[in-house]
Image (cartoon, rainbow, N blue to C red):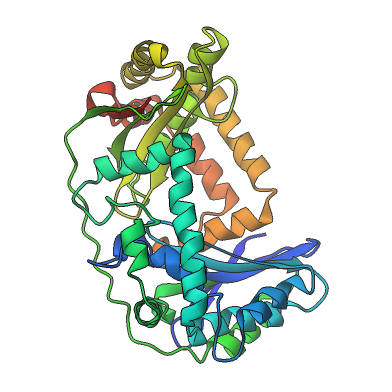
Length: 408
């Protein structure tokens, strides 16, 4: 089930995964445009366009767009990150629906007209989404942490924007964003399903081969590393929400595999992670705790999140710092390192059962790296991590390099 790659004459890249027996197919476009590409007066624009691109084209009204895939049991989805926007559809196999889905997505990219009445209605939805984060501090704390650690840079603002910035966005601004960045050279078409790659290419050419625009004017500067900070902000909740984190190398770094392994040991999804054992299983201080990374093309973040009683926050923080310090200095011996590798490989294998997630990840890798890792390459990279490489990766997240934000 290796990935297959090709490109259309207009420069649009394709990544395909042939799955003969899958009950569902997925196709879509990954666009190299996110919140970090917004200029002055455009905060929240990437996310706003992701919402409003479904609100009408020169050929279809919003209702027809929504019903086009749902009528056959499929779905039309989208999401925005700091560097990408995804528009995609998942639909039942065996119905020759790829042509329908690809034609719809092509229409959205080429012909969206952003009707003012529809835009104004959807603006209220986005404003409600922004305000809802006030009710979910366990999510909002991550956005505030990112704002602090990337302060003063294009990465230092919420993907959703602000109520003021979203209120100022117009159909003309949305159309300009689409024509500027949703261009063949800045996108990847992806497909996962039973159709032969040659047939997928013909369908993509028929619907997307007519897209012709110049190169996307992206300019991304690596943000400077901020000085470590420790911030507490009262919000009047019964539980304190804390994020501790540090800047780490990005998607193209040779250390990303060792970092992934270190983070999985420290606070991955397993109940046997160091943080879960120390804070929940042994001491009962938290209900949830996890560590994760968010890798961009040129930089990244390591974060630890935990929610606890406000009075326990200092103790939890000391325990987290101690675990990070021990990983940076001691690492893992050979036996424990082998066990950690087996666990991570097992988790990856289980995650690989989700075909939609796999093709979305492959599309992102193709967008930024021109290819995705095959399973055997992932195994080889993980198995080649040495104790020294693991300690070196952990050293990048030692306590003296981390920053902390607590909402309590």
